[in-house]
Image (cartoon, rainbow, N blue to C red):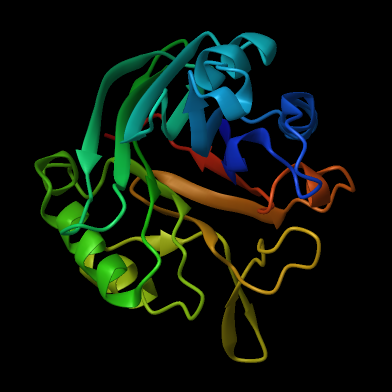
Length: 252
């Protein structure tokens, strides 16, 4: 069966014009109609975003019956972190702490999503992360994820998706995710014997591929694009990436 996944750092729905307009984020997501949505920089109860519970509100506005949120940062009032929206049941969730020393709190939200067809059932393990700003911090955070029981206990043949804002301008983490975690990068393009990520940042004129989706197991990549909608260039400082898979439900 077909499975579409989007990863999008929504910048608290505050656009490049500094205006809080969640309807723009909703419009971008509606246009791409994904089955699973990975969001980063999601607020709950924060004054800058009118104390909106973004995970709950976006799930309602976009008709996603299932959602989960992992809040990494506590502000004077409210919290923010990552959120996963799904058309299919989320049967397990946990927020993995990726915070390094005294740096800004970071996390990776793990959800297990159960997908059924008429005769088969398949779990998809989804990891929605937002890594730090320094190369050493990101390397250590990737190591935490690699060793976390939520990731290390997954059968390599099972469907697994790792996506989010990697903040990895120079693709230094690619080898760790590909070789160390046996993942493939859905958002890399191979051109002229070089591997280049889909560019997503800054949204008005993207130069870096910070937002990525990796995968393994019984998932077959069928397409990957970066959003180029005009509204997306101002809705957030990032553009979303959209990936299409064929999920082999006969697999484990």
